[in-house]
Image 1 (spheres, rainbow, N blue to C red):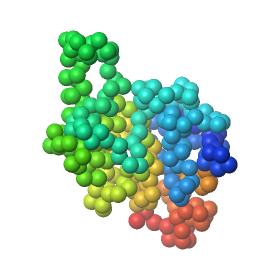
Image 2: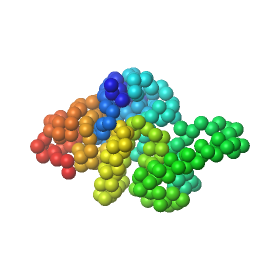
Image 3: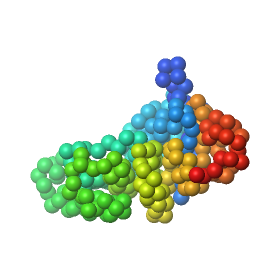
Image 4: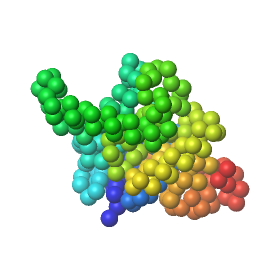
Length: 259
């Protein structure tokens, strides 16, 4: 059974059809990429899957459960987490505290436990801190745990946001243009990190414009154009799909390479 099933998703903003009847599956353990020109509907599709937008039509099922209409925090608690095109951190918090925020959906302490600093709440806070440190180690930023988020480089902020998403213990992670703004070295490190995320059992759905990364990482690629699905298949299939070449990649099929 597919981990994620999207069926006939449609979303309009006034007279603009941003997503037009898109259906796709993501299998457990896959790295699946979603590509298309600017304005193709990729981020809108992410927002429909993660609860930031309600579809006008269609449905989303995660692990066989319908999640359309759920609030984003409930979807995150179910095991579906995401990052955004522009890293959104709390600049008045340090790096560790930002990652700890991601762990909130896994905590159980209620208001009075937190206000009165009851023993159970203190133990839980310790576990949250340990989990956050573990994720910072995973992305290579544990040495910056005490740094204010405002002091980080753009690439470091991306890694902190990724660590925060991993702190939710996702079964599936949606990455919205994670390589945007990164230099060549940072992109290479990000690609290695995405592979390690998959190796720890997390399925990945990736929106990305960097074709070298997409073709080098993906098990499957879905192509959108003007909100509609125009192709889906392996990286090799997509590289040689005449319609994809025409509307997005450019050039002749045999000239579309992974670099």
